[in-house]
Image 1: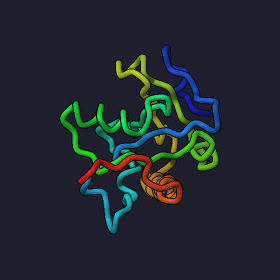
Image 2: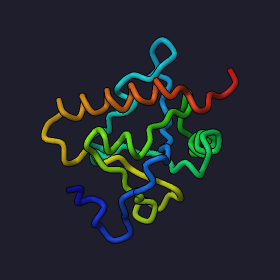
Image 3: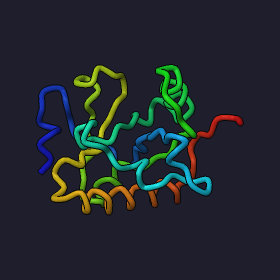
Image 4: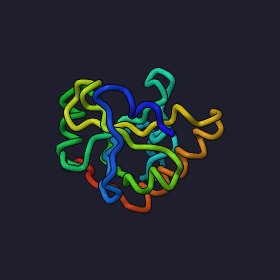
Length: 138
């Protein structure tokens, strides 16, 4: 079971229909779609994939990211149900990262880097199937 959600201030997301919004760096776009690297958290991010809650809207999530000085080719998303189907957990951790409407996909409990890559590929495929939710004007 996901232990990250048990930290004070964190909670599992339970609305399966909610879409978590992920910003994708331009270097993680190939042939107009995100690569798996866009959905693979790094050790520097403590194996937590950073997203925004759906209530923010894809455009606002992108604008917030850009206003923080980050680069993004656009907003893609995966649902809480899809994260669960991939045998991972989506966690509201906004209180602990002091970022409103933040949520993370927990990769910490996967047994290996290979497992994490396979899960990232699954999430990427689902996001690509859903399509880009917001792309800034060129």
